[in-house]
Image (cartoon, rainbow, N blue to C red):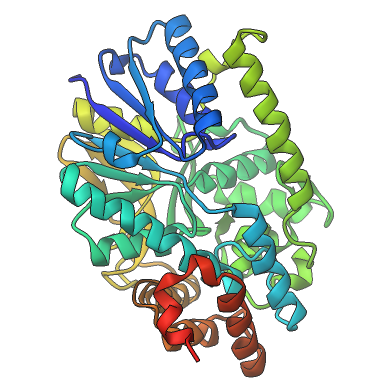
Length: 437
């Protein structure tokens, strides 16, 4: 495989950044390749750079590792650009959660769907498009591999407004497979799944024994019926997923809280507790202490050198750069016929073949009518959100709320949008003219 240049933007993320380093140093085919870590937090970036050098040396991968706070310095001649970025993520997300709730709107998470998902997209889409414009100038042939949420809306914006080759990645399919394996009493690697839908509203359309090819759906249906109502799976109690499974006939993925972001009745089963911001903050602080200990050599690297992160960005890089014809379980790409009863411009999540020819989504045929109806609704919301985020179009933003199934009050939609645009004003320059008195 030829050496490549990989730019990681958002490298100081306690989970994403560390996971990317794990996968990079475990990908031995990358010998001689350049890895550039980019983040605006200079002190933490230096810690991450120090850790990256230690991991590279102990693993013997042979990477050339650099860092910068200026992405334009990193992008020239890049082959792959990986993004996981956000501004004050949990602090602003908390407002995306609290404001709609105070106005009586019942969203269960507020990250990717509902009013919170709209607000999140309005902030993040311009950030990613700015990166893409730099890529068009400095590395126009590079692939964008995006982890930033809301995934489907961001990839639609990139597809519509830039010439950059882009793919969105999410580990939701693996979470769905793990829960199904848990019910079947098997290890996840023992089952093969074929999934299709839109991000965080993904459906396991086929489940088989990985060796024999036996259809495991009949057994899954039988075993699920035998579970107690309060059964705790790998991701907690999942009453919503189990109800959807019974009513639509296929297992949804990834988890109740994410799937429930798109459904007006999800709160009945998922509850209204929302994301545990305090727990997440405590985890990040603890993880940062570990990163510093690893970087300083006070803690052995252990599984950082042997255990993959669970993401597939570096599988895709290796497959493209080495023309490996590798099958991957799920990517977020423009539909173009992969799911025949969703629009061509929809951003769908489907399996793909990855090679030097690029990322080719597999044709999954038509989704069952009920599932297609759920997904089509989200495609229509995607379009309105993207228009609003790119053009600063307040009318499109309000229409996105009024089309969203989670929103059940015109007055609450109007008030919520006004308040979200006001509280996030400094992060929404595209709306300044429309919000002027």
